[in-house]
Image (cartoon, rainbow over all chains, first blue to last red; front, side):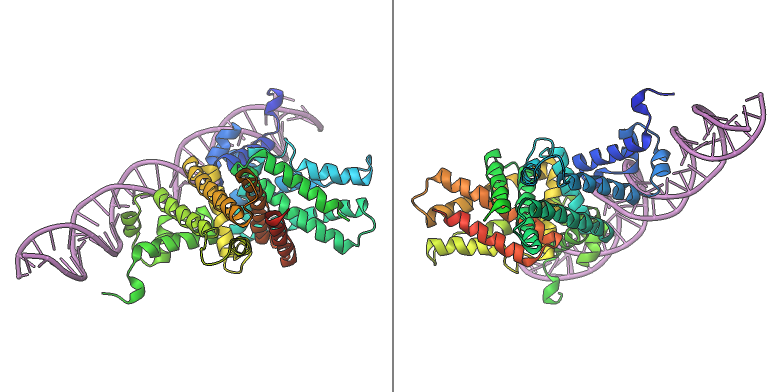
Length: 189
Length: 189
DNA sequence: TTTAACCTTGAACACTTGTTCAAGGTGGAC
DNA sequence: GTCCACCTTGAACAAGTGTTCAAGGTTAAA
């Protein structure tokens, strides 16, 4: 019996992998480093994750779920506020951290290099786009669904730019103006 | 004496490294693979590039120079056309290739993981921003230099978004609309 | 207490990696 | 030719890699 923190070793291993990926990139994620970071023995990593690539796949899914929650519908508030909240979340302090952004970047890079990761990523991206388009449709019922998807796609371009540029260290003011630009696109007309 | 192609082995080695980086990511760039791709012996890679990290640094500089040329001033055409051309170049077919975009992405990821690469990248980014601000200043002399830099920063956010989103496979129409958005920002007022 | 399913360990394996280096090749100056 | 600086090779080494596995620990039900 261990202290409370000690319990779910599988989760700790995944967490360790995410931390290493965000700090040192894919070359920094090796089974021994993951084990060390998680405070478990080498063998245990392979016990919970058959492969190194299983481990990375799990990390990918974890991030993708997190992304999807950004555009989750929240029945408690009116549609236009839901949309505005979703748009502002991407520039919020909990998301605009180096840890998260760096993780996203490394996972994108991974997806470029390995086809199976690319498929997971593309599917998650599609679902994000759908979620955003739905929010727009709810907030502006007069738009056709094609128009909604069009706006969602335009917004995603700016959002991706915001994420990337935040990593490169551009001033916050420029991020804020870009955020306003996404709202402008969403609520136009 | 060899055929013409055979001559500059150092350049071929750098080219090989860039090709591997863009196709397989940093894990795919190892000295043996670079040698094979370049058609030279293993030892020669270490002869021209002391280190693996020297090789990658060279690749970084190579891409950064290419980026900087995008906003190079061209005295032959009027200022507003220079600006428009520069903005359109980033969505041009020679730049919006998977090869180039993938390379950029992997280099950004690298810069996240290693501080020395990050410094090179940040410096190049700064110069790109300066170049773009200068073009804007030439095209719209009524703007203060701070206003120019502000617009340049906003444009870069959208451009980064275009690059990234192009990699993820979003439709061309959305890229074109984003391009129009950069021109709108540049020439506003 | 015995049993059985699960969890956890680290040594061991085969393989890949970056780097070094002695050996030899090449081309032009003298 | 002789020299010399330069280029080119691949074997060899030490360190690091993913993966396997026999051994033992832990838990809770019977």
